Image (cartoon, rainbow, N blue to C red; front, side, top):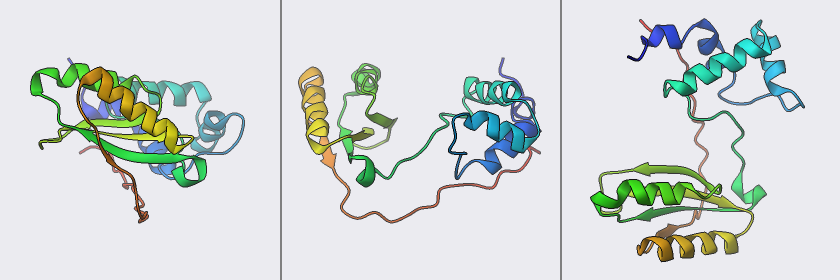
Length: 158
């Protein structure tokens, strides 16, 4: 049985989420610096983040790079037969360059983002996915970026 939201998303989780949606300390021990700013120990913060991840409330903690500065990126999609979706999604997720992989209700039902050092590596990954799955990826490289400041002020559960 999954615990109630308020037992997982406690005061420390709330404060950490609100304080660090838009930036982490750039230092050798970012979690230690975060913990100090939040008034807890590094171990308490790491335990809190692990608990949120275990309960599906946190996917990852880390930087989001401007791919144009760090290499190349593309949004891709596959039209996967429903019976194959789990296997194909697992195959796509094997690539460390894939940073999002999700199901949608559309003919192209499996969508993923690939970020790599160069466009040639993206092309290689797409070709490998096509070969191993028998499906041709839809490749949608970004033409123009429009900054979306994705962040949400969070409140304690009611």
